[in-house]
Image (tube, rainbow, N blue to C red; front, side, top):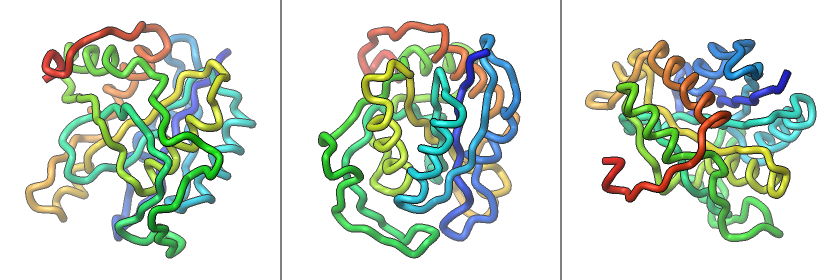
Length: 212
C-alpha cells in the first residue's frame, strides 16, 4: 500500500497546541484513496525541522506529502503556491534562533512551486462547502523553511508535495479576540478531501477571480 506523509508542527509562539499537529495525528493510520496516512510531528526549529523531515521521507517513502502549519489570523485552508529561499524570522523559533535574510539552501533556486494540484484542491473544497483559497505566500518563518526544504529534497522525484496553512482551533481563538478559527472535525474532513484530490485529481486552470 502506498503511503501519504502528512506533517504538523509542535506548538510555538506561546500557544499550548498547534492545530497542524492536532490535524495530522487525527488522520494518522487512515486509508484515503488506497493510501495509508502517516503523521509526523516536526519541531518549530530552523534546521532541525528539515532533519526530522528527511528522516520521515526516508522511513515512510511517501507517494504524496502534505506539510501543514498554523496561520493565526487566516480564516480558511490556504493551499500555498510558492516557497522562497529565505529564512527571515519575525520571532525566535523554539530553539531561540532568529535568522535574518538567510537562505534555506545555499545551493537552491530562489523559489519552488507546489507540485500539488492546488487549484483543483481549492475548487473541490469550496464545492464541498469548506473555506479555501490559493495563497501566494507561506511567509519566511519555519513553515516556509519546511515547504522550501520539502520541495528541494523531492525535486525531480515525481512525488507530489506541498504546504497548507490552517487557522486556529476555537480554543486558541478564544485567546485571540477577533481571530478566525475552524473546528478540528471540520479541518479533518476537509483535509481528507485535500489528500484524495491530490492523489486522484488533475490540476485545473482557473483565473484567480474564479476562485474568489
